[in-house]
Amino acid sequence: MLKKITEKITAGEEINSEEALWCLTEGDLLAVGRLADSIRRRLHPERCVSFVVDRNVNYTNVCESKCKFCAFYRDFGAEDAYLLQTSEIMAKIEELTSQGGTQLLMQGGLHPALGIEYFEELFRQIKSRFPGLQNHSLSPAEVTHIAKLSGLSIKDALVRLKAAGLDSIPGGGAEILVDSVRAEISPKKIGWQGWAEVMREAARLGMPTTATMMFGSRERPEDVVEHLMRVRALQDEGGSFTAFIPWTYQPGNTELGGGSATGVEYLKVLALSRIVLSNIANLQASWVTQGAKMAQVALFFGANDLGGTMLEENVVAAAGCMFRMSREEMIGLIRDAGFIPVRRSTLYRELERY
Image (cartoon, rainbow, N blue to C red; front, side, top):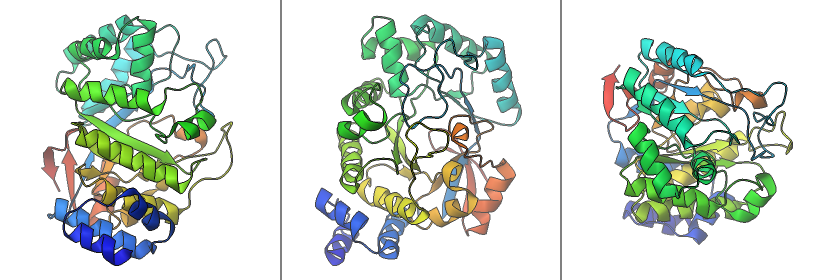
């Protein structure tokens, strides 16, 4: 099987579900990693590794979805529930831009009282005060929730949000794009088709997007493969995914509990992602969940990007995962792995090479 898969990859052909499952369950880690690295080198021959200077602003922790794998959400009215004031959000963005940040990632929960007018007003203020900042915000679940609360179609909600200053949409909330898994870990969240609908509409409106995968909770290897195939198909249909970001479930403080993926499993899934998703240019290593050393190893298993420096991040941190990295540390990490550090924009335009 390895010979057949290698021949396909060398010829620039896509592998099928059966071959992908073999890589995940039977393929040797280093052999699969070498295949992924060959694709990475073909797509990114300059040996550059990119990152973006960004901040996650979690505007609220109130969420009606109550996903079992999430340690961040709180019920409306809970003692430690919050909704940031607009002035607080602006102060956080001011700090980001003062440090050369170019990307704002605003994500919170499915708040029962925040309709589209709230986001339109907020995004207009952000765009007015920080016109050069990329507003890369709201997961498909949040967009769907806002549309429903406001009595709008997904398309109409996105048209209005875009007009107000939403530039691109992150792929959060994908978890595993298989509804049987979603029913177990996030039963109140949109199904995989709901996630896909937002991404299709965003692409039609010319909005860049990303895609993610959270694994290591309750899914089977077949579900991981199905997720990757569905993302690949969405991109082939005319999707606007600029990057794919697989990351591991963090069980701390969650209702779901249990264990998570090992480092070896992370690298295998990362490599398989690079092999299957040859139609998505960039693959991000998740230093936020894996730490700096594993992120370096990931650069030899298909990853070409380390995501953001994340001046702030609260969701994964709520599960007890507290890795942090400055711009200088990011540059050093990339250099020490033998690559050229590149600061990029959200849309992967090179801004500075170190």
